[in-house]
Length: 508
Ligand SMILES: [Zn+2]
Image 1 (spheres, rainbow, N blue to C red):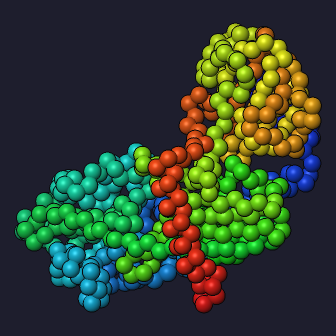
Image 2 (image 1 turned 180 degrees about the horizontal axis):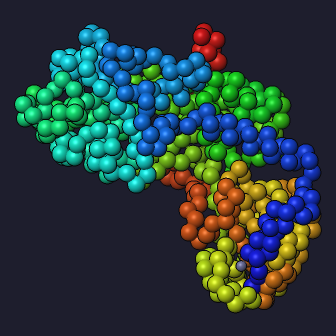
C-alpha cells in the first residue's frame, strides 16, 4: 500500500544532517506557532497540579529537622510561589505536624493521639518527607526513610484498614515522624530494639485535597489509622472581558487561572480556530467552580459551568450538563453538544482493508507499524473532511503521494494519503466543514492500488482511529432536553449573581 514510514525515517535523517529543504511554511506561520506553543507551555507550567517537586526518591534535606524549627504550615515557601496562588496552595504540605498553636480547634480534636505523643517529646521529634517514585513499594520507601521493616509492616497493616497502599501513586509525598525519645523496646513498640534508630511514631499523607490520612503509634505501642475528611466549599467565579489580543491573555487579565483558560480553549476548540477566528473586540464570559478548604484557602478548581464566546459576530454559549448516565458534557442553547465527533470513515461506501498496527508491508515485505487505516475504494471516490477545520497541508508528500492534512483544533488533526486529486479550491489555509468533499481516492505515492490511507493525529501523534473514543456530538431530546433547559436557566441566574473576578482582584 505505501512506504511512508521509511520515507519519514529518511526525512528525519536528512533533517539531522541539515539537508532537509526549507519548510514551506511562511516565517509568519512558524512565529505564530511558536508564540502559541510558548503560551500553552506557560499555561501548563503555571498549573503543575500537585506536582512532585521532590526529586524522585531523594530526601528533602530541609524536611529532616527538629519540630520546633519547622515553619508554620501556612507560610508561603518563597516570594515566587506566593505570586502563584494555586501553585502555592497545592504544593504546600498539609498538616504534616500537629498544630503548633493549641487553639487550632479542628486539628486538636482530630489528632488526639499524635498531639499527645508529640507534645510529650516535642524537641526531639524528627520529621522526614519522602516522595514515592515509580516502581516503589510503601515498604521500600519507609525502610529507606529510616524505619525498620517490622515497624513499617505494622504501620502498613494499620493503614490498610482505611486506605489501600496500592493506590499510592508516584509523586505522592509521605511524612514520617520519628521520636528518638521513645524507647521502642520498653514501650513494647513494634519498632524493635535498635537503639541507634529512633522509632517511627507517625505516617501521614494527603491522597487528595479533601482527605488526610494518619497512622499514629499510640501509648500501647499500636499503630492506629485515622482518616480526616476536609470538606471543601464550592464557590463560583465569574470572568468576562473583551478580547483585545488573544483569548489567553484577555482571560488571564480578567483574573482567570491558566488551568481554566486551557479548559475554556479546549471546550471551544471544535468550533473556533483561535489563531484565525478571534479578532480584537470579541468578547468572552465564563462561570467556573473553585473549591476552598475550611480555612478559606483555595484547594482546587472545578468545572466550567457556563461560557460564552462572541467571535465573528456570533454568540457561542455553552453550558455544563450532567446527563442521566452521569457523564458531563457541554451543550449550546438548543441542547446540542459542542463537542463534534470526527468521522471514523471519511470516505463513502468504502471497506476497511488494513488496520492500524504491526503488519507485513505489501511492498517492503517485512513487518512494520501501519499508523493509519486503509479503506479500499474505487479510484475517484470522494474523500470527506472528517471534521471541520483548516487545511494544513495539501500537496505531494513522498510515499504518501498526494496528501491532505486538516487541523480540527489544538489537539486533533486528520490526514488523507494516496489521493488522486484534491477538490477544486482545497489548498493550505482553506476552511472546510465536516462531511465536505475535499479530495478523491487514488493510488499515488507508494501504493499498490486505489485506497484511502487515513490517519488521526492527537497532539501530533498518530493514533488508531478505530480505537479512539471521540467526543459524541450528541443532541438532547425530550425529558433530558427539558431538564437541560432548567439547568441552563439556573446557571444563567448564578452567572448574573456572581461578581466578576477582575473586581475582586482590584482589591488585592
Ligand atoms: Zn495505509
